[in-house]
Length: 366
Image (tube, rainbow, N blue to C red; front, side, top):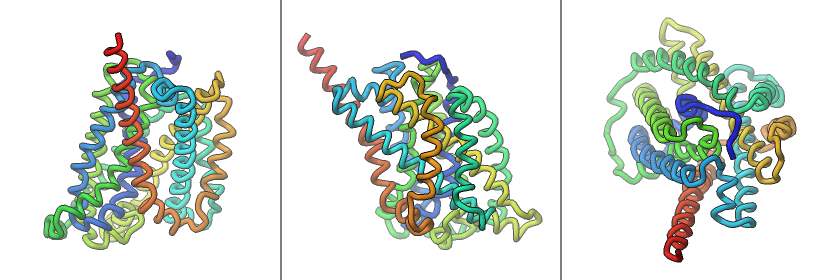
């Protein structure tokens, strides 16, 4: 299946960056610090390795089934009925993911900016923008993201410099004072997010030069890991043991800089980074949901599904949790890491192994 919509290698790199980086930087440092304390920054290295393996698996599957998404080649590998079950499961995963991200967006905006605004209004305003973007297509989302990703960098760099000015390296000691186990245990949090390169299973068929897939993906991984490293390190050096108690640690350090320094209301930068990241993340998610449903049920134009899926997203975002703060925190701490590892890493690995066995068996027969 050759799509009329195409994206370049650079656009793919920036799309994946915008899909993963903003939520990783603003959300997971607190989760990591909760277990590994001042050693949270070390967890980035093993998680980057797992991210690289994840990318390799997605690219290998894409090479074997060019022009196909994971929904399509899942049926080729598993057979018709198991492939359908996989397709239903993946649609459920992405719908749940969509609800959670929009819910996180509601909580972030309610925490920082619009404390008394109804949740449905915060969700609806962003969802409408995402709906328009998805209806325009993945190519339009990629072009829009080229400018938003650069703007994210421009906003983030001065914040990181200001964070360094308030840092105390002594807060990083003792290095691995509790041994290696807490570091490995905390690695599950960055791994859950860095393996979101699973999204390549839907984006690679739209790449105009498939040979650039590896370069674009690994570049994105290095940028995300590097950015997480240079964000997390000064964050620990500013707050030390307090980091684990903060819901949005990076936001807290930005607010602290605003109080201590000559700059005020710097959290507006964090809000801008978050909103731009969520816009791209939710747009890609809704695009994937519509595309997957279209391919699973042989609907010719996935764009016919954009409006109903957007409405469902808004409803789901305000009903997914009864108690926003405690339920979301519990989900991110206990449910999402194992659930994400299974879906993002174990599933592609099983598909790749089964496909290799089938190909090897066919060769031996012939």
